[in-house]
Length: 511
Image (cartoon, one colour):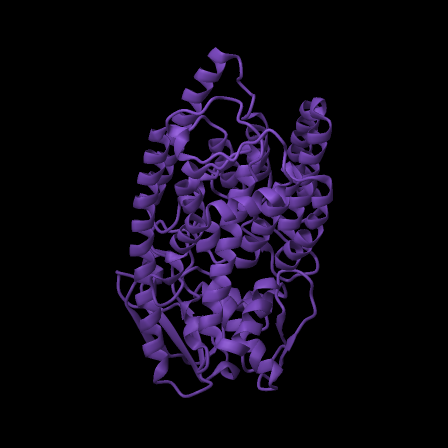
């Protein structure tokens, strides 16, 4: 949503960044329309490029995504009356992507629907964040695209938190409108807030809270320091308030790691090294830019608000617990602080975009991106091969057979891969330990004693951790597990009543 003149003359490096500056301010939507018209081919090319990881393997390997797709299939069975003991709850949040997948699945099949929904979510998130960066800087920050591409496929995406992910995308679009839109354009924020709420409430919370901050500082710039101070104090009080009112669990990870760079910490320790390299590179960008601005007397001329938003997002990530148990759910809301670092990452991109662009910025960020996506291709490829092996294993089972899994993450990995069994089960067997119905946080629910899925959250959690004792009523039951130290070779066995599901395999030696 670039529309105003930059606060400094363009350098040679900035010539790579088309700047639609003009003397008369245009509306935000007019800027978007002109941007798309002037850069249509580049937008199409970039969009195609950013979607490559959605199609470079047979399956999209992204943690919980496989479970969402499996539950879309269960919803189809429920609609047809073929899933006794299961039902669809009426709820107005945490459902947008699931509804889209179900509706599209009825038209084109779930495999194709999954690709379409995920690709759409990626584009909503990516271009929403890009619009926010453009609004923050009033120019088109092309040089930040490699960094934005990394965070688009960061920890939140790879964990498969699709509803939360797309909720953030809608929130970014709304914040961009609030930041630079005309008064009449703010009406578009309401439908974006509704879409964000349907996807995940935390996206709407972000849109309302940061939107209020931007609106106040835009109308009353002199109040900026007071609003920032008040927001910081409120965030510092969050831990005490939550601990006093709800059972909470704090992350074992030191808070200093929750800075946005942790979104790169995925399948192993090499990602951590890469994440620290990115943080070091960005710190070098910032320090050199601050030195130049200090000499010109324009230290906070364009980085002030992005810097404040990044600082407040850090406080929020450090203040949030990793898990909180609300009374209406049997399962806690988990990984809250870890999820919020996606917001830290995007605000960091806004800060980078506000710096004076140099050629070495683009070169450094591009190098990090190339290494990141090469790592990601290799590791998701391993998981894709494992899922194909699961499909082969279950193909020989009778239709309707109940299957559970004990599949652990790779060493030093933060990405869960156990849900590959869920997607492999679609259309043939039943993933008996699927976690979604038991949490009561999703639309598919299960009655106790049904034969399709465990309805008790504690029992479902025990299945995933290998601590479940098989009951006679669970039989016949088959387990899929890792059977050698590579953690990529999978085996299958029949379970007997009274045995613990994690007693066979390599899990005990590793965990």
